[in-house]
Image 1: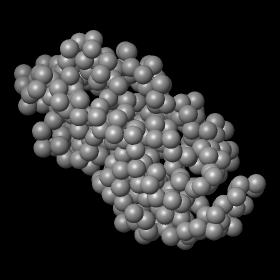
Image 2 (image 1 turned 90 degrees about the vertical axis):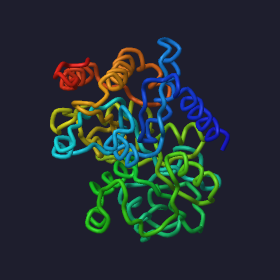
Image 3 (image 1 turned 135 degrees about the horizontal axis):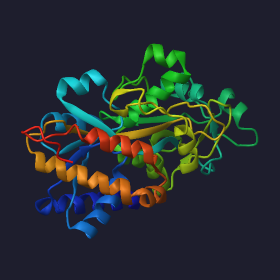
Length: 341
């Protein structure tokens, strides 16, 4: 809980500098820890602040469409037709992993093994006990309780939910046909928590629970996480190397706005639930100077933010992808049609 309060305090500190800031953004909670670190370092170096509201990807998309912020942030990339319809440009900032966080007495981080199919069955309500034979079969030598599983899910419109349900849809035909992938879905069982922060807090408080959170939240809040069987049948530890392995063969140009999925990628060391997180800005913003300030911030991030990202177990974008993004920024113009970056 103390770590949650620390994050909240950081958020309040960033928001408190809003009067002096010329950069405003809102959206995904997935990258909030690293956006906070970047904002702190950027203000120290440049004097420019950042007011970022960690309200979930759905909220970020709504706010950028309402033109109340300079940028929106989402973990669920918009499709090309949606970007074109709304006049938006989309680009990634950083990559990370989603992990199943668990609260089971005696289970330390990385000691429990799960498969995607088992996770899908838990959230479908088909596997109800931690000592279910399917879970026991993957965990020889691990004592699992005869206790009801308490699933926790995101109650808000969430890119993390999109990433998680997209993964489940890739590994479970049952999940794909009954629930599917989206920022919000109809959960058959469980309790809701708002934001990665809320899910982390609920898992920490509720015995025998499981919830999906960005890895930095699990680590910062000292939550135990399960290992997940990947496409090669291995159980890698979730860390920056495993997230890099998942992105190793990614073709960033196969989808408009770099909106690719890194879930369930091949590779013995690949973490199976990996995602990039994305920024949305208008191609022809009503206030070009605000969008220009935002792009300057993300350019600084690309040049100076990799070490800070690694320290929080995020993965920086490859240099060639950063160059492709900067090329895309040339499509952001002022009212006279002149590129602002």
